[in-house]
Figure 1: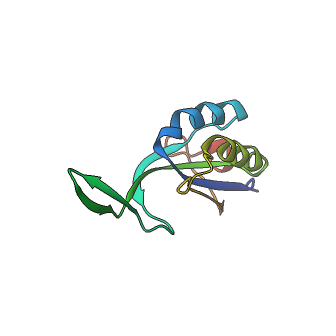
Figure 2: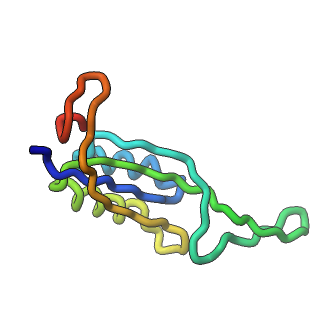
Length: 116
């Protein structure tokens, strides 16, 4: 029987990544995948001025972090992300938690939580 696993995906501001990485290690996260992404939320982007001309930046640079962890680690990881990534400003990001049916380590064929 496979252990229950979850995927925690967080979209955060790029300057928060190093602090978050350190905090996640402290709470026991085994690893993570990081991608540079761009997007927008409710604000639809932001207006900037360059050399006197105003223009709209449609997509804001963000960082996406993906972590697959055992079910009992999810609360600690989510709380670490909330505490570290929150600035109180618009655009702090989102956290998504979803179920993972299986994980397989390609090198060894280990499955479930042993593959993490």
